[in-house]
Amino acid sequence: MGFHPDRIESLKTAISEAVTNAIEHGNQHDEAMKVVVLLTARDDGLVISVADQGQKILPQEHTTPSPQIADVMERSDKGGWGIWLIRELMDEVEFTTAPSGGNQVRMVIHLEP
Image 1 (tube, rainbow, N blue to C red):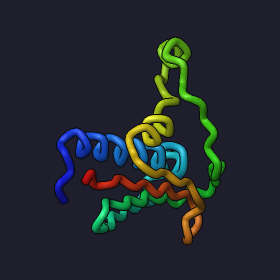
Image 2: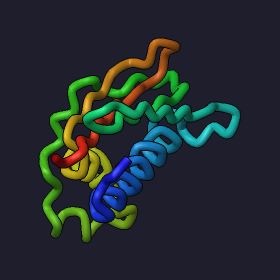
Image 3: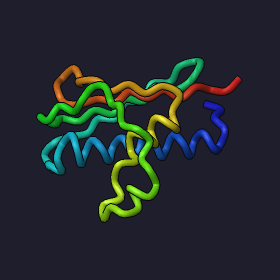
Image 4: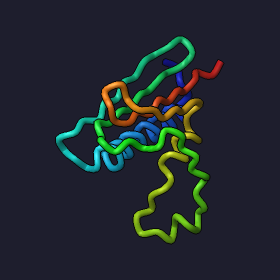
């Protein structure tokens, strides 16, 4: 599509974080549940949708503040960066309930002129 290599790395990282969140938080590590990733090319960019089948509906408005480095580094699981990272790397991010239930994140990355 013509993305700069740095934007491709951002895209790969954001998708990886979204899928990891869907597996861990949405589907609760249930191997019987699926994660669906849909990519839609547009003239001005790429739309990525990641949906889980989880019964636990996550808050639709994520107001997670930027994690403090010291707070995260002290935790043993090193979690807390995923949503923040996705928001930093993508041009648009929206969290909703998927049409079939579960959670969905819609991310958009624009082509630079």
